[in-house]
Length: 238
Image 1 (cartoon, rainbow, N blue to C red):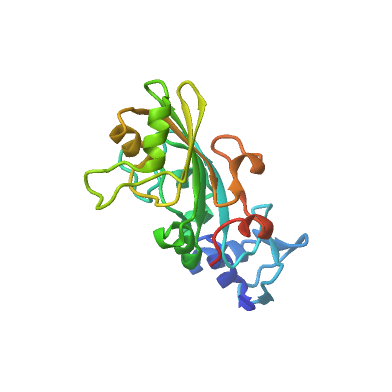
Image 2 (image 1 turned 135 degrees about the vertical axis):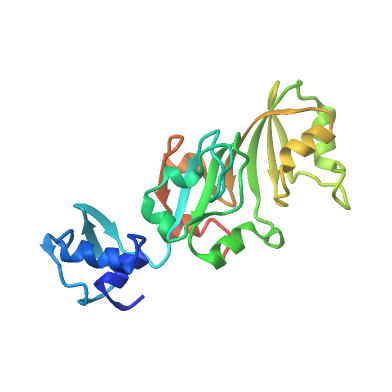
């Protein structure tokens, strides 16, 4: 990002329009290292810059890479229709800077959801051509059988797919629990595969994407965190 005027920096971080950001600055709401900066034309080096806006610290980032522990009954859409959108779980600044979910989880599916405002990153994680593995725990309506596991591993035919879809890994974890690893990322894939195999998915949770495990992030449902370089390295390279 290099050097930018203070109002452009605030706008880039999602604090609102240039006009609004200028007003914030002139009203003395922006400080750096405890010192108020009220000249919106002031140019600053953005690398490593930490601002305080309304007494809350914000590290200036060219892009943001987030992990969210998605609860049930939230939609992965910027324009949700029947449930609140996942963006309501994040600070308002992320909506202004066009942060988007990376792929989608159904409204009733819980677990790891990546979010970013970096287009190439979003494409790298969500493109079927990248074959990014995703790990799910599926609770089944009927008991799990060896035949069900074998079917999911060998492939099941979905009515709108040209070829059968198979799980990379499918392991029974309980009488009604499967761990399934997929890389295709088709619409409602786990639920549709279970239905095609003669069972039904009553609950679904995503526990990992690539090498990034939700459990390693220490999040509770509804919480989010920034991803650091080490965590980003566990995902598909951009």
